[in-house]
Amino acid sequence: MDLLRPTSASAYRAGRDRRISRVPASVPARVPDVVAKPASTTDTASVHDAARFAQREADASLLRLLHAERAKAERVQDLLRLVILVALGVGAMMYAPSLPLALQQANIAVLFPMLVWAFVLVLLGRRGAYPRWLSYVTPLVDASAVTAIILCYGLIGTPSVALKAPIVLSYFAILAARPMIGSVRSAAATVTVIVLEYGATIAILATTTHLTLTLDPLSAASSANVSILDEGMKLMLLATAGIVATFATAWHERVLGRALTTQVLRDVETREVASRLQEADKLAALGTLAATIAHDVTNPLTSIALSADLLAYDTTDLEVRRQAALIASDARNAAGVVRDLVAFAHHDEVEREPVILGDVVEHATVVLRQLLRDRGVEVKHYCAPDVPAINGGAAALERVVVNLVINAAQAMEGQTGSRLVRITTTREHDHVRLMVEDTGPGIPAAVLPHVFDRFFTTKPAGKGTGLGLWMAAQVIEAHGGTITASNTGNGARFVIAIPADRSVAAA
Image (cartoon, rainbow, N blue to C red; front, side, top):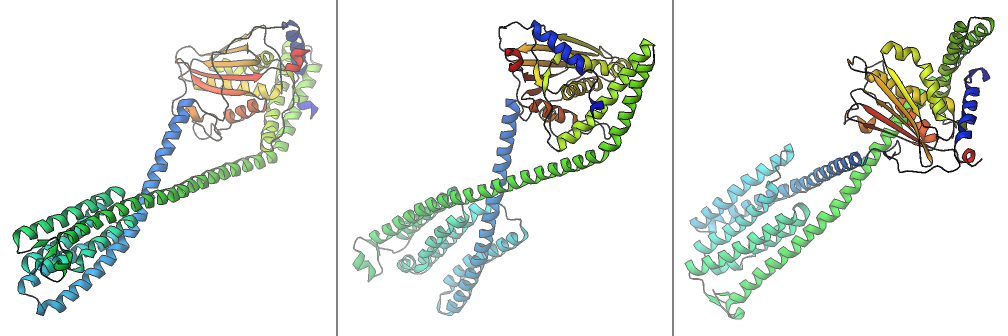
């Protein structure tokens, strides 16, 4: 495996020693123009947008679950309403012979539409086409039906009997059902309508019939009169029951909302775990594939490198020797790619040594000379004289630079204007900063937050795996650094920041 190490290792060490000797003891630090962020995060705006989107999705899911739970309760209530109305209809038919014709007609006028209404609600609930507005209308219709029966019996029959009849308890049953299926607004609207309707019923019966209102509840109990205190107490009880029902509805909504929120969060976590497991499966498959082909690929590359070394050793032609050395270097670089792929799949540690990042860039551009020449791409590299060494793997960092330059060259394919890649290596306080800029079309805003994601690529099928930038980010992260992507307005920009090797600087 020693044959797979780059032949330029001595060049790295020589360049490192040469550069380190020129680094002054104290270098003035300045604030970097671009603050690098970890590769695993996006910019602040993207994070906020994603958070807002996730919150909207969670709220929408919560509302859907809340409406679904209410729909279940409403279907049960609709069925119970139909059963109760059928029972009332049977009872009305049994009492019909002893009732005047006008009261029989009143029963039919109220009960028959309510039976049809209840039957329609049951059908809608079973078909899943239950409109949400019916949740507000249904209790109002029920309360109005009770009020209609009391009014009919009071206007046609005996007013005092109508007001004293147990049917008034139906109002309380309607209010009691609100916390289970209604909302706070529905409960408040229902109690308001019930109190107003019953108060209006008392006023109508007192002004249009021979109903006598008295202050003495004892005398009203044994006569055809109605006690004002009793009716006022009924109104007060209805209002109190309505307030209790409204607060109970709010409490029920809160508890149900918390339960459903927990369920939504659990579902989100389950989806995230499933997504991570899928990615883990992909990485496991990638590791298996890499381990399988590593032996078959590295052996021919080793033979190529050895043959090129022998050719360079035997020939006296300087150009042939230079080309043979480049062939050997490229073969070893390709073998290193396979080795790094296997290392990433197995989470191996990066080999560390003092490295001058400027030398890494220079060697990477030499490796890519033919590709850049064929694509008409010009590379300009500026390396500041005070750049310190970093502690890292030269070969792995070289492949990061190669990947960034190749991506820039591919982005500028078909471009009629200048095709320029600017690489700048500078010192930023206690970090070494490498910036790669191109004059291409830039990165679309929708793609920018995902450029470092695993298996994410915008290239056509067969031309991209979505692993290049992700592996670059992993290399930089393994060196304790950060990598960010942005647009300059005239192209794309990638900024790498890696901590300087303090041990070398101190020495």
